[in-house]
Amino acid sequence: MNTEPSIFTGGGRLVVGGFLAFVVGAIALVVGGVAHGRDAFYAYLSAYAWLVSLLVGGLIFLMIVHAMDAKWPVALRRVVEGVTGVLPLAVIGFIPIAVGVTTIYPWTSPSAIHDHEVQHLVEHKLPYLNTSSFFVRAFLYFGVWLGISYFLRRWSLRGDWAPAATDKPRFRALSALGLPPVALAFTFAGVDWLMSLTPAWYSTMFGVYWFAGGFLGALALLVLATYGLQRAGMLTRVGSSHYYALGRLLLAFTIFWAYIAYFQFFLIWITNKPHEASFYAPRMREFAPLSILVAAGRFVIPFFALLPYRVKQQPSTLAPIALWILVMHWVDMEWLVMPSVRPEGPIVHWLDVAALVCVGGAALAFGTFRLRGRPIVPKNDPSLETAFRYGSV
Image: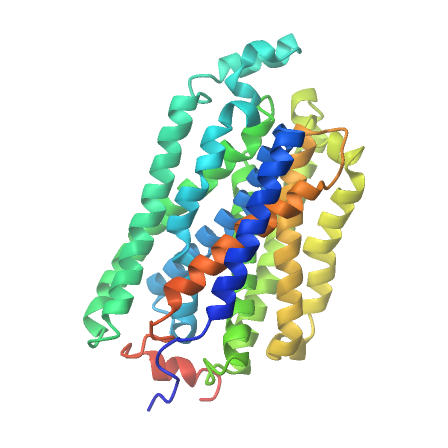
């Protein structure tokens, strides 16, 4: 029988702390925006891209689990649903991007671009890169993400009050059919929100790069959330085998992210075309220290840290690595955004940290609040006992 504490009633301090962090970060952003103008929008974009990539990465993980009918992640499913439950907040969070679209993106004013060749390239892309289609596509992205996450969460919570076996085919069908549009929306959102900061540049691997980083960050967030719940006396039957499974995924997708990052750079390097190299030029000069940090922090350090078998089994050793990966994912977003908009530096502005505190605090408060009063595990799922026994049979 399942002896897990059934209802999540804690998290009050997290809600209050997250809300206070949001308020402090928002005030700092507004004050900084008055003094520094454009920098506040770019700082917010970096933090917002970090958050959305984690949320959609978590949604993709949840859908893969349902499509495969995997058993062991059932023990952690409500945690993943807690992550995807923050997606409605991301819609509200898009408002500052919409307000500052003409300030953030150079393609909104091609006539202001001084390089005539770049101006010509941007004008050639105007059928795609224009504010109307930008907002329409954003509406479609959020519609796909919110629609699928809503039904997966609704069916899961409904199963807490009645046997959920009849919903298994629904979970699998919606997840299998929904994975392509969710993944495509994720990829194109990266192109629209991040790659278009350098409108003359393009890479067919950029969307996959953002996809890989977000999925890896979502796995790291899952490790941290699970560890935190266990320390609070919840999810007591989640064991070393579950952490080992998550640790293997962290290692695998650390390698996958590095593979995508390397070959994007390698292909652009060997072609040596000016407009393609324009993305890497400031990142290899003024932002070289940040580039080194991204390479070392996102691949070298976590790769060697995750190699030992016992490290992946112990939550006390795996959680710090997951936290490092999560922080490095934000650093990666800084690396994607800032060289394109302030090529002379500074590498990291205090507004960047304020935006992270604002966005992260809001997500923590909202996500924790939506978990409160809900069962912490899908208690009527027929695979739950099998999930808890994972690795012991």
